[in-house]
Length: 150
Ligand SMILES: [Zn+2]
Image (cartoon, rainbow, N blue to C red; front, side, top):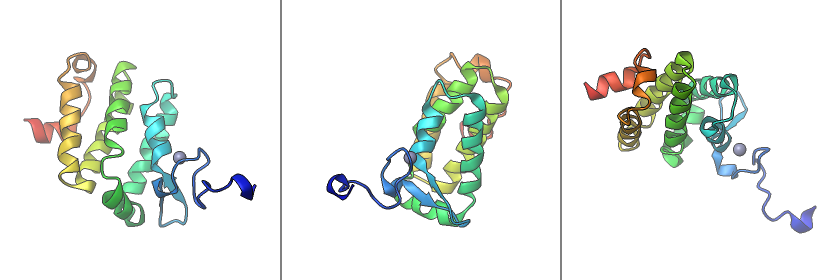
């Protein structure tokens, strides 16, 4: 094992992502943001899996042990996956999931602050202005966009 183990960091996640992407939580565990991002971006992930990741990230964002390294090292890492999760939820006409994704986007934007927050809002605005999503999202509460675009 040791002969081919030069790329095995001590705290890498099960999927083999970089150890620096596994951020601690105050409960003693860790959340791999690369795994979370991959699941959010996956068009084939079941809605309840995406919902679970969104809920986990929502809890983690309220945890200073997780938020501090996220803000310092990976403030943009979740922006595109979150936008893709929102687009995926809209495509499935899953209003509850879309609301959850937009709520988390608002939480993330306020957690990371500018300039990463501005980029996140711009990405969301771009997706929402592309037209195909608007008809699916008109019923969805989008507090972040209501606050920033009106
Ligand atoms: Zn991972």
